[in-house]
Image (cartoon, rainbow, N blue to C red; front, side, top):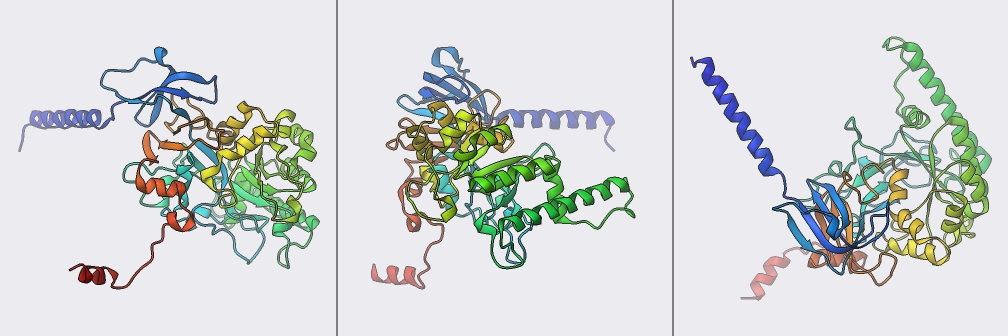
Length: 447
């Protein structure tokens, strides 16, 4: 049997080796030097340096104000523009498999149980400079399920499963909201509602049941014999009423918008209004309710009748009224690769440049409760950013690189990434045709 001293020495050696291994595993800092930097939360920097390490932003500022540590890798970014990674508050990339036709209210359904991490839409989003998405079920139900907030971590070996993209909370749980809708999308034959009034009634009825469900849980005081049977649908509604899950609400007409605000005030859930085609008609009411809006601008007429009063001026009107405004893609409605164009259209229609840049980044991060981690370039935040060859509000500018958690996830100079940036749906789609015996035929005919 070894002497105890030998064991102590062995443990000390193991600890020393582990410590050395951790130091070695830490990546050397990387400094992007000479770029125009748009921090979003702060003034634009004509010639600056962005310093990152271990997936976080270490420093950002004018070149002469940022000290680059010895051993840091330096990347010449002169002539480039660096801005925070874009945030889409409303995306359908990866597959839209939420609630089904069995009923109009299914809050227990989780969208991430039906997402395909190999869907090419994720790569197209990176080509557009997007780094964070709120992936939602569709809008054909009053409540179609739970959304998921994801980070496009395709750097290095890339993700192996959809779980690798999840943004987790402090307890290690996936973060996400609750998708709701009203208006014509969710109005059809029974068991779905046929009118707007019935739609609001069904929602109100379920939230009242959720209140009663939580009351019974509170009264049980942890006694398993007194607890009500577990109800996944009601659990999700309770989370919304307790503020732990933001409601992301599809709505177009001004009357539908006001219905959402009434329901939110009645049941105390936090809500982000999505689309708001007629939001400009009730901008002051939205502002008074302190409700943020996730707006979409579509410059090709068509689609649903209730969106006929959509205006390019909506973003500017809402922002001037005091409403926090973000834009979203609703991908495929707007291809993620041209997301920046929406903010440019907003500026053309009267939105300020500052509000427009925030609408692509920080405003969306706030709506997802993630502003402490993403949405602007500041020390301590995640190293998520896009590098462009021109101004982000110019249609002539391209995203050259997209970095997520301090790793390059998209490089326009890479032929495969370039295809995702410029190819059509077929060219950049993740599925490849299968030709039986083609390889053998090709080999035989080359001899």
